[in-house]
Length: 129
Image (cartoon, rainbow, N blue to C red; front, side, top):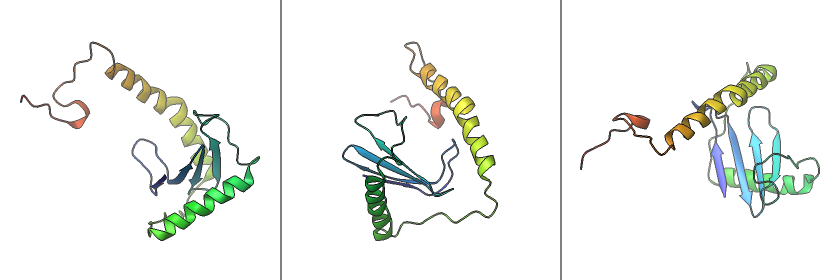
């Protein structure tokens, strides 16, 4: 399974491409070019990056990912001349410590037993069919 997200998202997403093969998932970050490798059976929460201790698996998956992106003619992100790794790291930490907890609380609020969506909930219009 392949994912290709070559742009920034409005909820904090960054340019990445991924491959999932059997137990393994490799994530390629386009901003700085680094890869992360996870064994999803042993670590479904993707807490431990195994890239350094499984470089052969990482390289094999990266080769498959690159071949796939080439085969389908995927649009790749352009290098950003003003990219600042320190600023990107600070933004990532802010997303993780502030934005994601807020989004998670919103999701929990939506899932409460007494949640009643209003007519504009999640940019949709409820109809009376």
